[in-house]
Image (cartoon, rainbow, N blue to C red):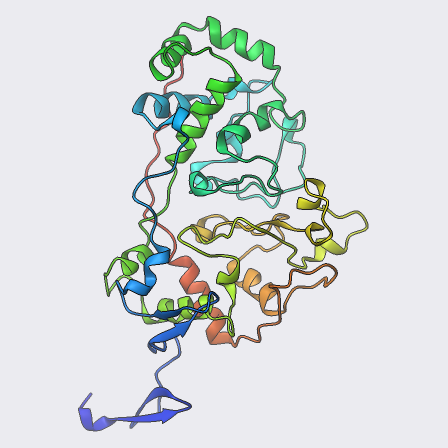
Length: 364
């Protein structure tokens, strides 16, 4: 196309390129406005590698407790425990049964299945980047990965393990005894070291090499114009308002919010965080999940009620359904179709390249 075929016109401050054939460049391919004031009130320049994007960069090291530093021996032991179904009462369910690498370290089900396939109340959250979170579980009842690790084994509705039997078996299994000696020399084989090993392995499940990360690092070609525009919608308080909760490099404030889901209107709804912290605004509030790997971790919400990212965006666009005790961060958005499509495209850009996972050889 010749330069003479293109005319630039300004409509409402946005550049629109019109062509002699009367076509208009679609919203998906238009560049976003260069600067957006985000939900923190900060000016964000939408240019690859710009210093204003710094708060979306992960720290160099994965955080770990002083008494449980990440080592190769601990990762190896933790991986074997994570994939070993013998840690469940019936010997047929492991941590990986629900947190499967085949389904984005979740299970692709609306809500989890527990002991003997009992349907549980809440969805299985992904374990991607849980090592960066200062609090765990949908209701925040576990403060660390170490504190969380034994929970499924202890729960009668989940792995339902006979714990004395478990520790007797681990202490008499030559293979596991050698693994524990290498990973935690001088320490007992008990709930403490089992928890620490599993938590160490979980910390290695990370997602931080997505197209968005490469764009933040300076790769101008990493994101499409539509994805950049979707990021602008995501952080703009007058558009998506998403980053008011989905903030920072892991896209979570680790807070708890009632999103006005239809299930909150059930006769006896899940009260969420309120069961752990009996404050009125915590009724029906659940922990903000990461948006990373969203494309691989459907369905969405704690009750699995949104099957697609499009359905998820539509829920937020309406400002929720059941307004009782609604989070103050929820509001009607009135996004148009192109803005919603851009927002979905941006969330899909938060997926890192898939890493093959080799199943471990377990001790006999």
